[in-house]
Length: 375
Image (cartoon, rainbow, N blue to C red; front, top):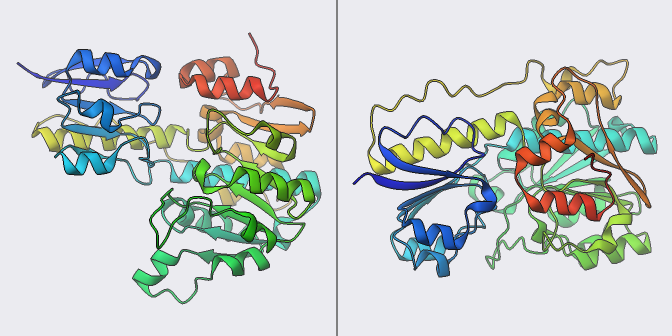
């Protein structure tokens, strides 16, 4: 009997690749439920982050392999998998460029709205992994100065150009977080954005979280914003999502529902990673992956015309692979959120994106914070 797999139908390029070697069931994200996984008795899961694989599920199934087309893996109980011989893989770096572009789009919009040229700002990047390195490379010619913080990497590699997090908080007007979420005692990142850190910031500081929701203590951030201890926040990852702290929303100048990494490039890289790991684990040789072409930007971000260095539409045009998949949701004012769209050749209607995304959480958040979603 062929090996049975369950695959998220939203993963591009998957269909038509594994049918010759496996009994594969394609399901929309919202239909990959605990009950369905248990009922199908699958040995492998090919998923995205909306599918949670905890110990309660895994102990009731014959699953021995999990591949997620995402860089993050906090939806997988890695400890249980390791203890019970279940192999799992994520796709590190698959969405790194998309997230880095999100940060620069957010900062460019801020530059326009607040009249703060990015060449006069100092950016602090917390976490210099795949996303942090991409952001560093893209921002070098856009932002005035960049400081880096990554204690684990500094210890491993002996980097002398890294700074402490407190130093970044005290000296940077822009703080962008790109760390994994961990409670590991030595390098814990849970609530890395906390009241003590925010107290070191200036009233001009803008805090960006496109890492994981739990990296920020949302109550501490709310209090700092209310008191004016920091200038504003730009958030893609929300603590407790989908149940977010709604009181934060009026103080968030740029809000998206965890979509920063949703780019054509990121989805292709994630799918290819899932397929490669699956073929390797099950020993299926000879399956051709050559048709999976990873889209690349035709023009790098830093080719924004110099005469309009902070013109948002120019930024959008340079990152159309990201915008085409995600749209960009901007806050117009504290009481009136609005969906802003950009005219470019491959524009998708917002309703089509939300349907394609297949993530009820994203729709729920957009509606909750007042976005007008076309019907």
